[in-house]
Image (cartoon, rainbow, N blue to C red; front, side):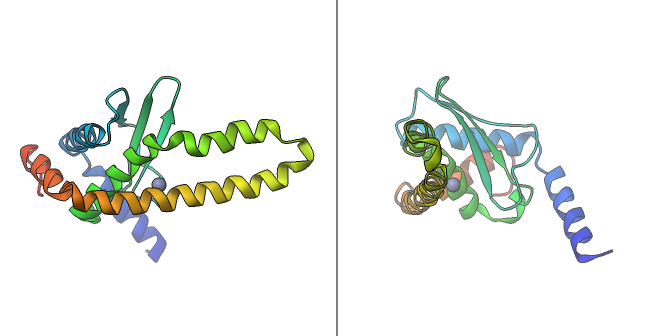
Length: 164
Ligand SMILES: [Zn+2]
């Protein structure tokens, strides 16, 4: 078996272990994050229809009109450890909080620019996404620490019969 095939098999097996209690624990922890971040008007839910792309620990799809966001976990979720898990979910909730910051560029700036300026727009959009990512990463790291988020995540995991 090639290295790539073996890794694919390993990731598929890991993902198969992300079962109901794992998703439930993630949901409970996200509910806690939502409260901590002052987002009670949002429904942030863990999607159960497949993992996010392999290049992230988690991702989220935000629907600002309905105040809903779907979070997906990655296939190597069980491999990344409690600290990275707690940080990743908090990170996704922060994206919900700061969603409008990138959307204002994506929608409003795009629509006000003339067609000729699309190339410039693409650069601005790419840069804005990168800076938002850096900001969210930094905030998630600081907040994971100051909110004692890893402790909370481990407690929720234990309560759901999972290894902390
Ligand atoms: Zn992110």
